[in-house]
Image (cartoon, rainbow, N blue to C red; front, side, top):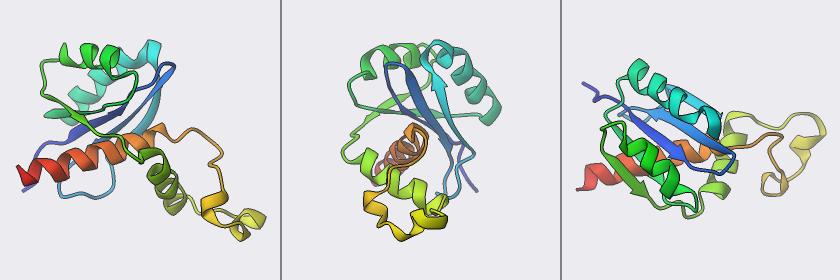
Length: 136
């Protein structure tokens, strides 16, 4: 039986990536990039819709202001190291969205995604939280 999901958050100044992830790890239930001025309302909707039990917040530069807002929801908030999430998020993006046409000839390490990938960074943050949670 699976436990309720975790909300992963990649905090930013203009936008935040979010991902709703449940155990066992598999496809995320939600992947979004939310403008910060709409972040609070949208997160409340996601928490209610998916029955989120905890929040995994990336410990990046904008974690303080975003964390304050998230703590107001009354859920446990865990800070997760964001080390190399951008690089790994790019790899996850291309695994889910393989390059097509001439772009498939370029080594993936040299490709840049055609859109922001904060949602994939949030996915990695949620997965790290779940993996470390099981170790404690």
